[in-house]
Image 1 (cartoon, rainbow, N blue to C red):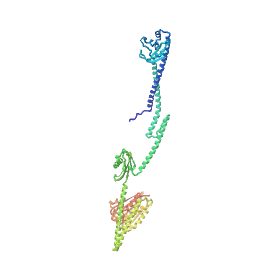
Image 2 (cartoon, helix red, strand yellow):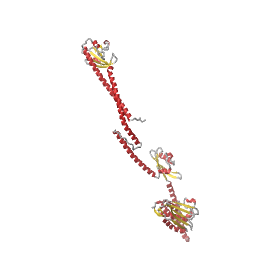
Image 3 (cartoon, rainbow, N blue to C red):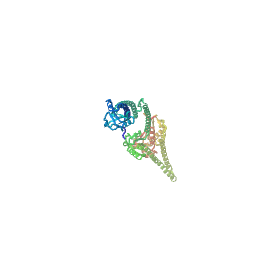
Image 4 (tube, rainbow, N blue to C red):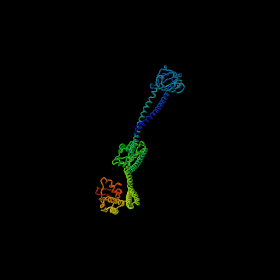
Length: 567
């Protein structure tokens, strides 16, 4: 249905007033004219009656000279005079031959006059064919004197009165229209300004000035607009504050969040989504990975949550995508990067497998040695010490493995208390604890340490240095030298452990810090290594905000370097 055409207040008031004026003045003019007509005709009839009575009295003095009396009337006398006998026959007439006229006894005004009353009638004359006003009065001698005037003669003054009335009405209407136009303009101006202020408020200008006028109703409306703008401003401020708070909360979430409208427009994306997947597009069909598009459509069709793991990017990351549809076909997409979780799960699974395998070897050795020992007690007592030593060696290997597992579990399962640590003191204590092991292998430890302070855990840092020294001793031949250096640099404390051992191949350098990884499996097991020492070193250094690296060549020894931020 088409909207109705708008119209200004002034135009509407003018049109309404004009219609009202036409109707009111038309009705008023009609009744005024009728009243004036009746009043004028009544006056005319009274005048005719008076003239008829005078003529009736005069007829008494001219009993046989009626024609001469009528002929003696003033030529300017407009009324038609008819004298009618008591039997209704026309005795004389000022405008026609009586002999040609019919009996008038049946005429209403004549019948009334013959009955002794004044007769009045208005009708079309048979002889003239025009509307006439008739007044008949009884004469003293029994005859009737009737006067008549044509209707146009009677109504001519009324036409003049009507014309003057129309002129007055027109003047009054024009004056009224001008007055209404002025009033409408004075009313429309403040109303227009109020409308402009309301439009400004609707457009967002809540500080727009609301005009005042001398009209109480408009001022009340203006106060309402001002109150509405104030309330709207307050609510918008609250909404903006809530929006900012929600934006901060969503941006702080590690999960990427994407809100999609029912027409596939992107309504919102938080910072995590931007960090994970790059620039946010405008439409859904531009979102990558493309699996998100498919999941959004599937969730909308099924009206239920859809979730899946998707591999994306290079290097490949594993993204957990959850799509929640709304009733209005909007959709919320939550993306989580589960790559690290997957890696941790894989590492944990590998760790359990490797730990089980590493524990299985000494346990199997101990069981085999114990069974052989039982037989040797009975059949070869001289070999009992050999098998007992094998059991002790396997037990010590298992104890070292369990100890390293406990150290690694402790490091991963708690947050240590950090403080100022004199790293030189920690390094010298680590050397003291590993010296007996070095002497056992015929290796010399050389210490070159400068005083330096770092922030961290003294026990954890000592454990890391001991593991580096232990690793260097195991891979050094008898007569070898292991050097521990501690040097402060700009903002860092650098700890290096250098050995003169067999070295590490280039293909193994990148994996030596992995759990249970051994560059030389045979030698590691021969010397009692667990494969966890260097992974413990890496964990301690990274938890202190530092980094660890290795440089090595086969046959030329290795250099392990720890870089720790200074306190």
